[in-house]
Image (tube, rainbow, N blue to C red; front, side):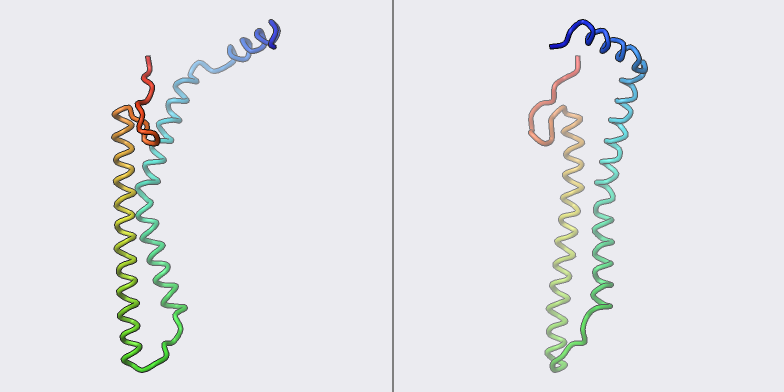
Length: 124
């Protein structure tokens, strides 16, 4: 249990806090929101770069195909189709990430917690 001395020490510590603590916290909160939005914005770009790097890696490391020319051509066609579908899936996921971020911002403006779907407590 805290005694009177603990209370006095706590008051002295609180008195030493800068007057602009609330403003600084609000500024940090705003900057964190900006950083999170920027991270959401560059996510699809990073995914596209990863895809390009993977394509280059495959070109460098791809073994020499064996088989008849027709078999090699058929295998390349299937591989190209798989890669194209993979690219389409990545594009859809990137679009979903952008949509989710837009939705989160709208929910925040509407006063809804984007994780729980519940109303956020109102100030004042």
